Image 1 (cartoon, rainbow, N blue to C red):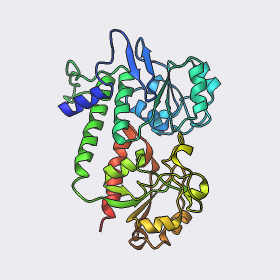
Image 2 (cartoon, rainbow, N blue to C red; image 1 turned 45 degrees about the horizontal axis):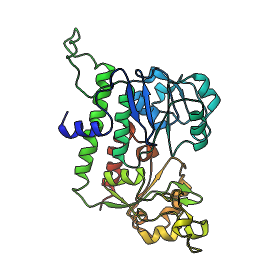
Image 3 (cartoon, helix red, strand yellow; image 1 turned 180 degrees about the horizontal axis):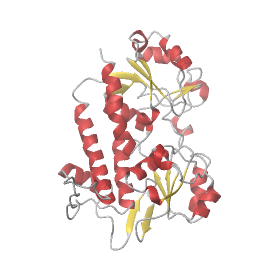
Image 4 (cartoon, rainbow, N blue to C red; image 1 turned 60 degrees about the horizontal axis):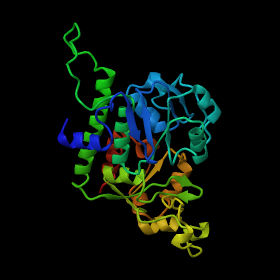
Length: 338
């Protein structure tokens, strides 16, 4: 493990999993959580976290998931459903008696999180806005599971045919996190090698919505070699202001509101002149009819045939899935370069 990875892991709260006999973790709300040992009963309300937990070897500890926790498909079968990300079945979650509920500030409803808090459950809340934040959260989940940062004390014995047996779950989890840090560092270095391609990524069609620069999606684009053409465009209130039909409310009138998902017009898209338009399949599943609208616009992406539908998980799922999706995004973006 390189010094860079070790320092980053330490800053994420990864490292020796125990302080005495306890696991102590601070979540993205600033709340301190403590367990006497690695939790054995986990409910995940976040699809990307469910994916990461399974990749970290915790499949058998998951006792609940949302209906949107669909990957890895072969592993989530058999894990009890506890509603959706915005409409969790709080009573059922309480009845499952989990030692921790993994949630996300943006994906899950505030009301559900507050009800789980009020029931006395430990709710570990994340809110990654950068790919690096997602990697740090992956390390935090590894720590939660009791996996320390140090290398295995001894090598595993060779199998009878002379081939080393697969790594133990803790070793595999440690390597998963270390690989994520390496992949992120490599992407950081690589994105400086070529100028970014101007990209537009809508997340909803009616109304047409996109993302500001202070989002995970925008950072994924940046790491993959693209520049979000709306990175400087905040959401404006009221709706008429967001669409350019009225003056926006002053900053003091919009404090506490999320300004990172603006509603835009097709005229704005034309003015921003993206070289590539990426149409993800979530949260809105963009259709061929949607794609035809963007292909009809007078923009470089349409003229060059670079209005492309893509896997939304590659853009939006943080943690283990993000580092797998990064190479696919880069391939799409590099193929669209002149």
